[in-house]
Length: 471
Image 1 (tube, rainbow, N blue to C red):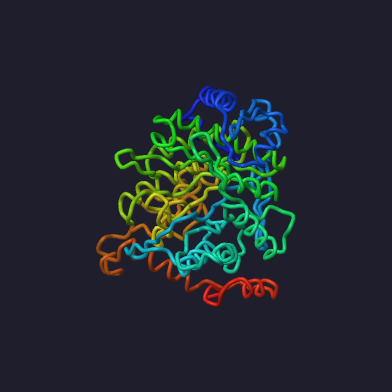
Image 2: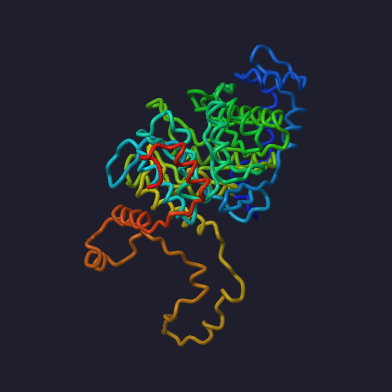
């Protein structure tokens, strides 16, 4: 993927080196708490100082770990193969992760299994989403006894795109990886990535340690994130917070490579900021973008694939705030030129809500942001000198739409560009939200079910209750 390095305009090489230097200092002198006997044993075997649950990591071990992380790997499913790393040609889009509510036509409510299936279908039919997360939202009506099986199987029942798997306990991680291998009948390749986050300040809790171990051991992708909240669980300044988050990330990366040298790792940006007026986590502010620009250059410094977020917003409705934040954050994500952009569309309410209409609008925003970063083509064909030489003075160029015009201009699906009188007359003054609502409903109506083989249908029948099988 050709890099233009937009983010180098926002952070100097010297600042990146300073962050790395301070991170190494903290790893060696302060140490990181790992709540995992298995990881603590691995650190001891490597010769590192371990005091209780605190591990002191040397620069030598960090360098070894970074050197063993692959720069390229393939993320596969039964329907698609994604090249991740320096060989890929464009940013890979990924679905949402974790919202507990949905916003549908202005109504805010808890998410259900019907919403879960609806969004799988929308992600499957999206031309900007390539990876679907097993926890794309939290279906409240699914019993705990079959939730892991359902949330893993459903994305494969309705889509053949690659997966991002569940994280959590050893049992959950083993189960989700096992089901993905069996359903796809692929057993020796990268089938899943997952988010693995620190527990700041300077700690990794039991469940995230177990997640890291299971995914790394099975050769699946660990997206390693430091998630300190400035002023709450991180220092009350962006620079300090970035250093802490980077320190925790490096510790996590080292752990993956001690479990399984060569296990694929992605450097995950932090999208968690704070508004201390309310002691809340937020994601739609300018600070998110500013921190990403620094983290992007850190990932480049380490030579690791990186993952941003997409069109994030703290807004509670499809309003001006939602559009402003989604555009700013989505554009800055693409400026970081990440290998993967996840939570790409639909996220609002500071990660708590997935919006039906916002999903459709964010697809448009993402495409427009991509056009913004594509420069003007000055090759002979696009200079149009022959046309200018032939045109009569005071005439016009109206004719069949040319290839060059179609290349240079994109046509947002939901933007209202008609004359007011035509819009009012032809569309009865329909709002952008209403147009987006009509669009997602049509997408669902047009969805074509996938063909599943006998073994896959048998898994569904054996593991899921009737009400959660194919709809």
